[in-house]
Figure 1: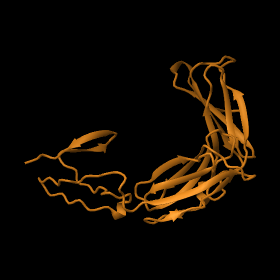
Figure 2: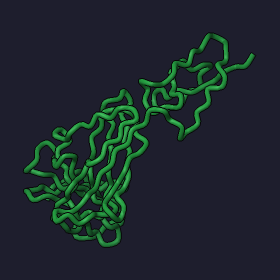
Figure 3: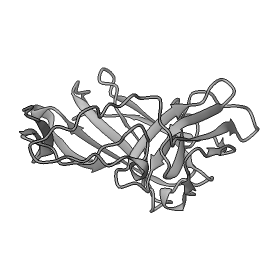
Figure 4: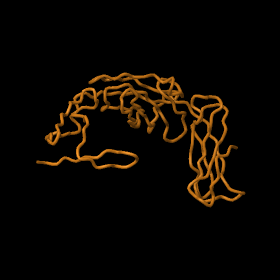
Amino acid sequence: GTHCRGAIFLNGDWVVTPALVAEFDRISRGVATATDVVVQSGQTTPAIDIDFGNESDVASLAGKVTDLQGAPLAAVTVQATQIGDWWPGLTSTSTDALGEYVFDHLAPDVYQIRFADAGGLYVSEYYSDTDNQLDALRIDLTASQIVTGIDAQLALGGCITGTISVLGQVIPPNAWVSAVSETNANAPTIASTSMETQTGEYVLSGLPPGNYKVRAYIYADPDFYYPEVYY
């Protein structure tokens, strides 16, 4: 007969196994509506074929992102974080020239939506109008549901700039810099970046008004390793 083999991720490595006892999706997005695949000892269960694009239980979610004056913002990253499933997931898309976005292939589940300006000019936020994920609204999507109006208005942020050096000299290896908020204890690290290796300059942008501590450390070079320090 046919000998079945599979693999599982165990102790940091993929391990080949004689048989996988598991439950996989049919053509659906949610595990709750997936078909049970019955496996019997020593037997092959054939024709468990998955054709992407024919899911039967997807939902969609859409909205628009503008600035505080109502002008559309293009190229804003919109993230849908799946928080209700046993297997959390993150799906991303971007706004178009009209500031509009759409997720048209989401599994039925509970989601939180985050908006982040890829250019770093505007302050990131969660829906609806909070910088704290704990306060973000939860959107419960059901199969075939279409949700619109998940909009955001982003405010311009401030920025912090500076240079990173070691004993007055710019070191080509890598440094990581972050702004730690004293104002928002629930979301302390607001922005982080790596330095420009030739000049040592960094920019922390998209910062909401408030007080910050600037934190930095050097990594990835055994000759110039420095632990975390603060300005």
